[in-house]
Length: 71
Image (cartoon, rainbow, N blue to C red; front, top):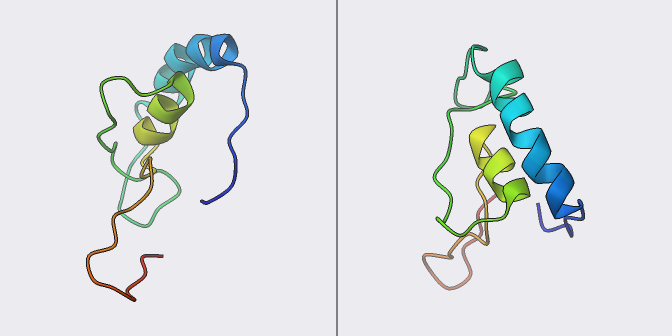
């Protein structure tokens, strides 16, 4: 989180179906290694789609109140 992401887009696109096949049947629980899939923007990069599929929140979180932080 907050770190630059760097993966060749074609490689990420090729990896997406493999990730879905490998991790598709694994249990997903909030707070677990793989949380339930998260929504990503319809124009998201392949790497962001992989992250969302694995339960990661993609994009910059919106701060709801001045001075509040999300972890």
